[in-house]
Image (cartoon, each protein chain N blue to C red):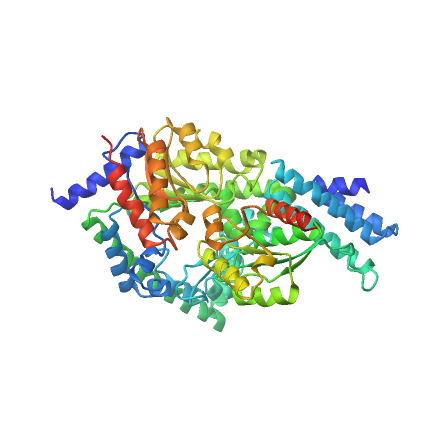
Length: 415
Length: 213
């Protein structure tokens, strides 16, 4: 076995041991790199998003420098500028497209699905997606709004003349956009594959091979918007429930398929709208946790490790979160009291996090080291812990990230 | 109008609208109806503080208030603002440069408004220079800087630096709010306070106005 293969296996084992609540050789460390490598290398976010070779080189160099235990692939969700352009994508603003060249992208709140459209969504989701959702989110597909309902295209009387609708000049622009989007996407995925291969050659396992969400978050983030779904809890709770149930198998199946395709049995699940302040314990128990638990159990059943990024503060959700089989789930905390979490989950879940973004962004290396020491002393002492920032690195100062890595690798060795 | 206050405070949206219509038809002064809403939103804010209510209730209460204002507007005499009552202070608000998030900011706007502040809301992605120009024009007691991202630390700091440059920093309180602010960010920005929810922000503002009076 080559040294690199050895290194790859060591890193995988380090992660696997932590997940299984065992003590690895040292505390594993990994991050969601976001656009940090661009900043570290002195290139703009725009360059990273649009110039594939530039991103490839900068990210490879950055990973070789920091040597994390797992790495995420920047191409699918960072190096996708050309694709966003072709699609005229509405859910983001990005460098050179509403934002300055050196800024990471930002999510745009939209009410893509109107309240009165729940019934359409529930009756025929695919038709709703193609004729309502796509035209609004991918503006280049706007003319699809004029297609006949997809479920009316059947046979004989109902169907054989429907290609007629595709003939208009505006549909020609849609066809062109679809082909161009396909090309842009193929190019990005080619780079993604190359990056994954390069990382493996350098001995770095992938941090995750699939993405999923709690259905309430998907419905809120992408369909109804934050305000919309919050009001729906009062105005149409039954529809919210029905829509979440409709989304649940989709959230499970797409992620499982993706882990099979990528061969990486970890699924990344960021939590957005079930936080302490965002809903009552009763609302959480009704609209959020049951689907979240089903999601986690479905992945565990398939031998997949859910890596749950608990955004915001979830101190009051920990009791629910710990109700999963032991040694199978990673909970990555942002601003939740991680020391309380450790106390409550010691025998149940691997804890990950949570060097505050404020320290990494405007603190000093000494601040960062002091916090990492506390984390290791309290959270890592008996294993079951992964060092990470509280959230994606974005604007962190390089010297602070360096301090986090150096200190963890030195002080985090188990004896 | 206790029934209206209760309907709003208990999130009975349909009842609240029906009662609002009823009182308008009965010729109750619009300002009294608006005051009932303000009382109700006061209760909602208090319940948020106590951990009984959460973001959905704040948002829904804000929407009820907005719908009621629309109903009431045609009944107002010319020049009557409904805000009517004496303002307790001026609050300049905005999401800082580079950040386009507005949900938290909008909640702060609504709550500061019903708590008696005159609010000037500059929107999102507001450059430091603009904050300072508006400061000179509006002469607020408090400047509220909103931002959800870590990049907003520098933008917030730029506003504070600008306030220093024009010799205004000691005359005004600066409060920062958003998911990523904490004591470290507050120290870096040199703000007077940091909050991660709107209700706590209002509490600070009210305390400051009290100690000023």
